[in-house]
Amino acid sequence: MIKFTVNIDPITRIEGHLAVRIEVEDGRVAKAFSSGEMFRGFEVLLKGRDPLDAQQITQRICGVCPISHGMASVLAQDRAYGIAPTENGQLGRNLIQAANFLQSHIIHFYQLSALDFIDVAAVLAYEGSDPGLRELKSWVNAQLASDAIYPAAPFLPRYEGDYLRETDTNITILKHYLDALNMRAIAHRMAAVLAGKLPHAPGLVPGGITETITAEKIASLEAMLSKLRTFIDHCYLPDVLETTAAFPQYLREGRGCSNFLVYGAYPDSNENTDIFPPGVVIGGELSPLNMKLITEDTSHSFYSSQSGLPPGSGQTVPDHTHKDAYSWVKAPRYGGNVMEVGPLARIMVAALRKEDSALKNLTRQTLARFNMGLENLESVMGRHIARALECKVVADRSAAWIERLIPGETAFQDFEIPENGMGIGLTEAPRGALGHWISIRKGKIENYQCVVPTTWNCSPRDDRGVPGPVEQALVGTPVADDHNPIEAVRVVRSFDPCLACAVH
Ligand code: NFE
Ligand code: MG
Image 1 (cartoon, rainbow, N blue to C red):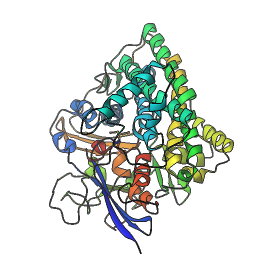
Image 2: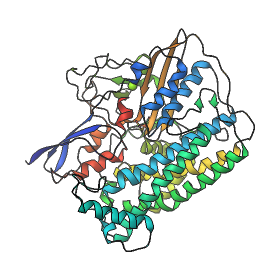
Image 3: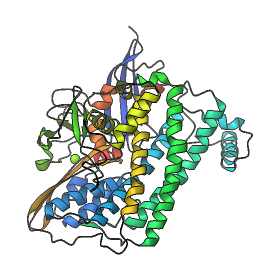
C-alpha cells in the first residue's frame, strides 16, 4: 500500500488560520484532521460588560460576516429585553443582512474558490479591449518579470491541476473576478445606507435599526440592489453552473456527514416561514429544530472547560496543554450528531419540507434542468451551486423588502435592560447556523457564548472520537500528488471556512 501524509498549513484563500492534515492510502484520503490555529477569546472578554457592547464587540469576531454576529447579538438581546422590531426595523435588518450575505457569497466564489478551477494564466493570451483584463494581463506580466519572492500573488504560486482549458470561459470568469470586487463595494454601500457603515455596523441595535427610512434611501437601495441582481443572474449563477459542467467529478467528491442543521433567517411578515426555513436533517429525515439538543465537546480542543455543555451554560477556558487536543475550534453536536451547516444545509431543509418556498422551487428547477438529483448537491460543486441559488433567492426577495419600507415610520423600538435576564439569538450567517447565548446579571453580561457556522463545519473530533464535517468530507477524496493536494483544498474551500469566526 502506498501511504503518505500531507500537512496543508495554512490553507490559503479562506478566512483565518486553518491547517488540515490528510493521511492518504492508495490514492485516497483515509483520515483527515482540521485544526483551528489560534485563540481569540471574545467570549472571555465580553464577561462583565454592558450588554449593549455585545453587538458591537461580537461584530469584531469577523470582517466578512460582522452583520451576522451583530444580528445574532441583537436577536439574543431582543429576547432578553422582551422586545421585537417594528415592521420597518425588521425589513431594514433583513436588508442589511441580505447585502452582507450577497457580498460574502460572490466573493467566496470568485476571489476564494474560482481559482481552484479557472486558469489565471489564460489572461496572458488575452488580446481583447476590456480595460480591466488588459490591466490584469500587464500586471501579471510585470510581476512574473520581477524578482519578488511571490510574483503575481494572490494568483501564483498555486497548486497545479486540471484547470479549465477553454480560454473564453477562463477569460469570462476572470473578467467577473474583477467585477466581483466592485459588487462587494456596492453591497457594502447598500448595507451602510441602513446600518451607518460597513464592515462593522453601528446602526444595528436591539429593537431594530437606528437609521430613519427616507424616500431617498429607498431609491438608492433599489439602484444598488438592481446592479447586484443583474450580476447574480447574468454572471455568478451561470459561471457556477458552467464550472460545474466542466468538473462533473466534483458533483461526486466531498460528500460530508449528510446531517444538516438550519436555525432559519430572514423572517417576513408576508410569509408563513422564514425565507430560510429552520429544520434538522438526520439520516435523510427532516425534523423540527430542538435547541435543547445542542452541546459543545472539547475533548480534542485546547480548552480545559467541561466537555458536552449546552451553550447556555457553556464555558471557555483556554488550555494549550490540553491532552489529545489539536484545534482551538470546539466540537458542537446536535443530540450527539455531527451536523453540516450552510448553503447546502439550507437547500436540503427547504427541499425536504412539504411546504413550498422560493428556495425549494428554484432548487427543483435547477436540478431538473441539469438532470441532477438532490444527492448530487452533497458534493463540492453542490455547495457552490447551493450558495449561488440561495444568493439569488435573497437578492430577489430583497427587492420586495425595499418596496415595503415606509418612509418616516420608526425602525426602532425603545427598551430597558433588565437587571437579570437571558436570551438566545439564532440566525443564518452566509456560512450557516449562528447562535449567540447571553445571560445578564446585575445589569452586566454574566456569560456570553457563540456557536458559529465554521465551529460546526471545521470542528475536530468529539468526545466519542467522531470527526467533524470537513474532516468527514475529505475522507475518500482522491489525492494524486503529495506536493500538490489540489483535490483536498477544493473540498475544504467548498465549505467556505472562516476560522476567525470558528475560534472566536
Ligand atoms: Ni467569519 Fe461567519 C459566516 C459567522 S463563519 S464568516 O458566514 O458566523 O463561521
Ligand atoms: Mg463559542
